[in-house]
Length: 102
Image (tube, rainbow, N blue to C red):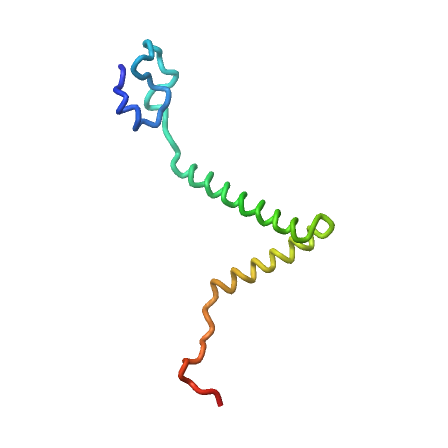
């Protein structure tokens, strides 16, 4: 059974025959082909984390050099941690602009 090209464009299984395939038999049946949607999300998050790690490492290497990379990595990690904690913590109450100091 040959499927029209429009149906194959939306199909996720690449092993189905297409028009002009000269009657080749697919290696897997249509029911054996599936996609794991969550896997692409995990893969994307993995690449994002990997990119952030190597970018961070490059900045530390550029600023501290190879002679002090470990200590620089620890210092910069502490700075990033403090920055993130400041961003998610509740803002400090500031006095209203019209209030006078005594």
